[in-house]
Length: 350
Ligand SMILES: Nc1ncnc2c1ncn2[C@@H]1O[C@H](COP(=O)(O)OP(=O)(O)O)[C@@H](O)[C@H]1O
Ligand SMILES: [Mg+2]
Image (cartoon, rainbow, N blue to C red; front, top):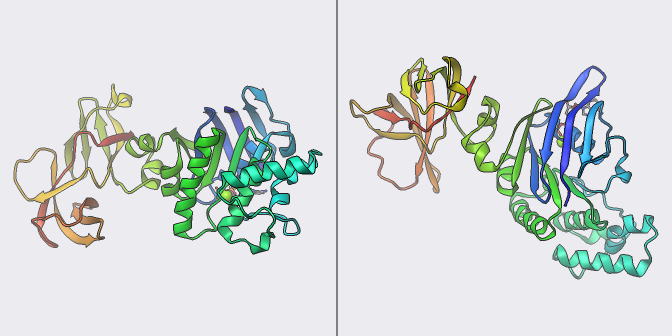
């Protein structure tokens, strides 16, 4: 169980700032994801934590101990990558025991540890098989076992499931979570897939353009995104640009809405973005005098089986609302409807 602390960490490649002033304090024993779009700096941050890359500036600590200058093999970390990077000339148990062999652990102990880990990853009978005889999913499990063989302080995985097909990927997400809980090892999974991050994590670190945008639980990040980028990147949202005022008003091109005043808006009117999640938005047959509602026209209704999407144009904004599939809507495409916005919709500083 190890906590991870980054303070003022920068990484430059020439003039390019790949990581910009990252400060993180991540508790021990948790399942953490680094989430962000392609090119946002996730792998670079991963490589800084693992020691594969050295920071240009700043400090990295494991359990309070400064590891900033240490190379990867001097930090006690176990790593897994998208490409399994197993040694094809070694069999399964030799692969798992490779790091132990480098540390001169005797063969019988290495094999015993490998067998123990194979039990843990639910592949108890493949110790003597060749790597080429394994499926992609099995190879990734062996890579996971190999990373855990030395009881690392941090278990680090960079897009570990990206090469697997969707079904297997979902299954492996659950397996990884179960494994993490069983071992209690502080784990960081890098992913560009917001759904993967939301299902797997205790804590999500959202990264964009080399900087941390938000750190929080999946629910926190979904319900209270810190920035427009986070609101847009995670889940679907209706984003309205306007002005918030301390007395609980939000004004935008389509009208004025009553919105609970967030803490940051206690003093002056400020530019703000309102984030209304599709399941918060209620579409109803048009009725006059309804509080907090906008008029709009239904442009598309899409029944996806599990849920139903309703698209409504109001002024120059296209809204999306989600309803349970199979409900009687009471309106159809082309109808004028009322869109009801709850006062609890999340207001962010622009
Ligand atoms: N060794 C390097 N030299 C120069 N630029 C790099 C190097 N490694 C990464 N970068 C750049 O840093 C940015 C972030 O890359 P990366 O961390 O791999 O992103 P991600 O993993 O989020 O897709 C990219 O623009 C990439 O081109
Ligand atoms: Mg990457």
